[in-house]
Image (cartoon, rainbow, N blue to C red; front, top):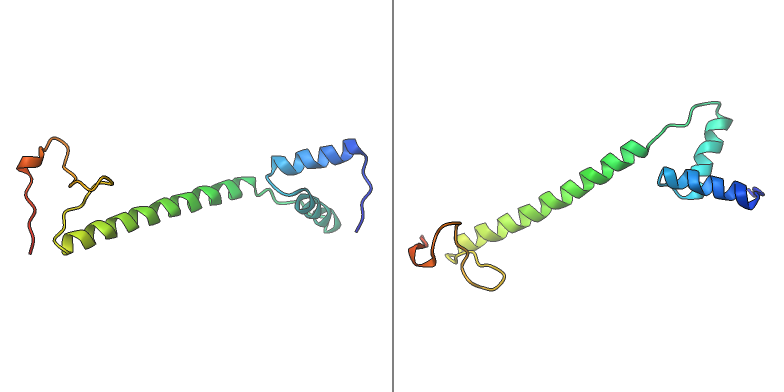
Length: 104
């Protein structure tokens, strides 16, 4: 399908598509299909934003799980958890000389 638009009309469509965070062609297809079906076009902006937030939270939870698994594996191996510099981590308010590690 070919649609001839003036520069101003094209800019208007691009702006409308950007507002909904869609590619111009995808936005135009949704609008055209809604009109052809004599239906209201669903507004998915809020759903897309919510999905992005959920996907971000899932990624954060996955990272936390990986870190937790590494700590548990180190504890089971008898090694204390270490910082990125390789030194044992301390609890806040604890000095290094008072730390003891139990190995079983």
